[in-house]
Image (cartoon, rainbow, N blue to C red; front, side, top):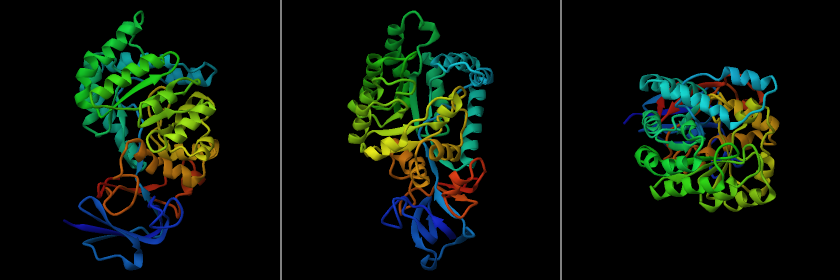
Length: 391
C-alpha cells in the first residue's frame, strides 16, 4: 500500500465543520494523505505525516470531487434543431424526449457505450468523481435493460427510468405502458439498477401513475427518486416526501406546502436543483434561497441530457446557481459535493475526511469561490478518484 501526501494546499474544503471553519470545514495551508484509495489524514501541512510520494498543490485550492446525482447519458442522436428552435421562441415540452428515443433504439451497444464513456470522461476532467446515470431513452423492455447494463459499466449509481415519458408505442394506451413499466420492464431492469425514477409532469406521468411506478420499484428493492415540479406545480414533491424518496429533482415550481414538506424531510429527501435545464430552456430558475432558508437539504447537479441540459459541467451549474438562484458560493459548492452525496445516500464521498474515498479536485485558483467568480473558465487542474490521479 503506497501513500501520497498532497501538501501546499492554500485552501482545503473538507465539508466537515469539525475540521475547519464554517459549514465547509475550510482549512488553510493544509495537507491530505491518501492511502489505499481513501483519505488517511487531513490537517495542517506542517503536521503532515511522511508518505511514499508527494504532490505540491502550490498554494491552490482543493475541494471534494463533485457528486453529480442526476444525468441521462445513455443516448444517441442530436437535438440541435430543437435547441435552436427553442432559442428562437418555441416552448419547451417533454415531447422532445421521443426524438432521442428513436435514435437510441437504432444505435448499437458499442455506440451507446462510447457515448457514455465520452461524457463520463468529460465530466471527470471538470472535477466530477461520482456520476449517477439513468435509463429512459429506450422505453422498451430490451432497450431499457441494455441502457442500464451499459451505464453499469461506468458507474454503480444507475437509475431505472422506464417512466421517462409514455413510449410512442403506447401513445393511445398510457395505462398499458404503466403496466409494462411496473411489470416486465421492471423485472428486466431491476437487477441492473439501484434507483427507480419517474417524470411526474404534464406530458409525462400524473401523480397516480408516478406512485404506481415508484411503489413497484420499491417492492423490487429499488430506492425511489422523482422528477418533480419542473414545469408546473404538481404532486411530485409531496409524493417524494410521502414515499421517502432519496431526492425530488428540479423543484422549480413549489408551493409553500412543498417547501415545508422538503424542509421537514431534509434528512431523507433532498431537493436536487438542475440549473442547466432552466438555462437551456429559458425557464424561471428554482428559488434555492427559499429552500435553504426553510431548512431543506439542497443538491446541485447537471441533468446532463441531449434535450434540455446538454452540459456535464458542475462548475457551470455552480456559477449559475450563485448568479441566478440566490445561493452563496459556499452553499453552491456544498450542494454540488456533500449535497449530491446526500441525494445518493452516500457518506463515503463529497467530503475530505479520514476514511472517505479519496476523490479530490485541485483548482487552478486560491479559493473555491473562483468557481462562481470566474464562470466558464476551466479551473480544474487535477482530479483524483479513489486515490488515483484521473485527470
